[in-house]
Structure formats: C-alpha cells, structure tokens
Amino acid sequence: MQTDVREVLDRSSMTPSARGIQVATDGPVIVLRGAVKDEDEARLIEGMVRLTPGVREVRNELQFPAVTQP
Image 1 (tube, rainbow, N blue to C red):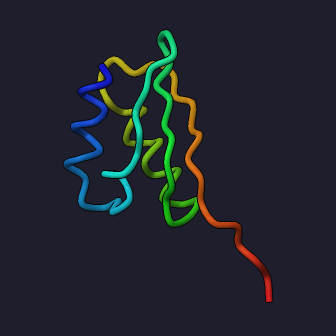
Image 2: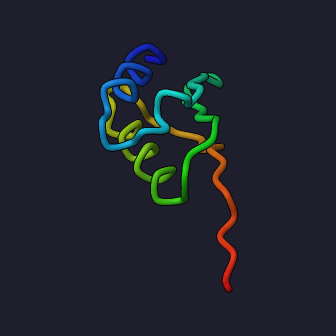
C-alpha cells in the first residue's frame, strides 16, 4: 500500500511539494511527513491519500510555515 500511495503523490501535478513527502506505515496507518507550502496543500495531499484504494487511516504530520497576521 505504501508504494501505491507514493505513486499517487508522484503523479500529482496539483501539489508541487508532494514529491518531497515521506510516506511510511505504522501498522495499518499511512503516515505522511515532510514540508508543504501551506495548510491547504497539506489537506489536499491527505485527501488524495485517503482516496487511494486500501487506505483506511492517515496520520498527517506534514509541516507548513505559520501564517502571521500583519
């Protein structure tokens, strides 16, 4: 399943940061680690992974820069 998730992320043209994402498994859980540009991209990547056949649970540990208000 880890390979399937990696292939989904590598094929995505909507998420430029996806190639740098580490995909691991913790039992039946897919764990996503790495840096993305923002929270929206982190959610999009998680959503793509959740739609991958066979994936039942995702732990999203993706990091993105904090947004500061002026």
